Image 1 (tube, rainbow, N blue to C red):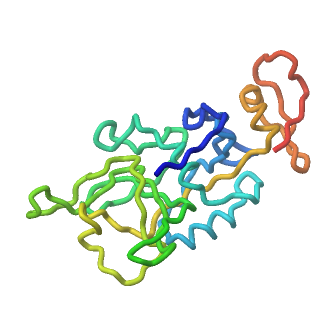
Image 2 (image 1 turned 45 degrees about the vertical axis):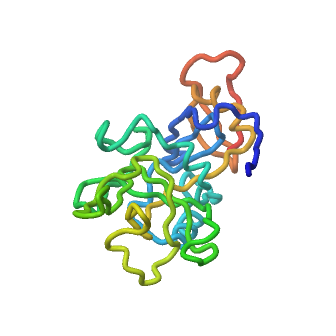
Image 3 (image 1 turned 60 degrees about the vertical axis):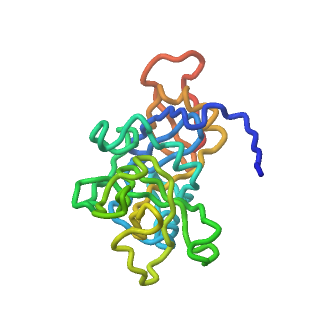
Length: 237
């Protein structure tokens, strides 16, 4: 069976990032998706419900509509030209900061990140697991021969997998499933919000502006380079 989808945003996933510092706060806008991301991550792991609450409580840049990204949204900022073994870095654009961890193999690595997307079932528990993306190694306790297993990067950076939403006391010290996928449960978080239509449509033009001050939900921008027909404009945020 197949499920079809359509859409007119052919640039989705072809990132066009714009950094926005103070007074906007530490955020990154993707002009191709209309999404605004927190530049920094949560700096600590947490279970899925805590991740939802964490984002909902954020006020970065003066915005109060931060949320946990869906699988599609988080996938849009995975950079598959980067990987721990190939480039010695996480699979994400360098405009973002990302925490380091010590992984199951005792190596310096980068975290798994939660999404809001729920898997239908986990060990017969409906809705018991949620999708994450590995921005570092995607480890499994594995050996092709079945003996002398060790922690290896079985799926690679950018892999989409799922973890239980909460700790139910199951022993995952040797991973889970046929390839011994590492189960962490306390994954990291990068929050997202959706830009208004006005900002999204004018995003590329705004790249030549810096925000001088905010008035309510509007930002007054000052010109930093010459663009035609833009002097003195207001932009909705």
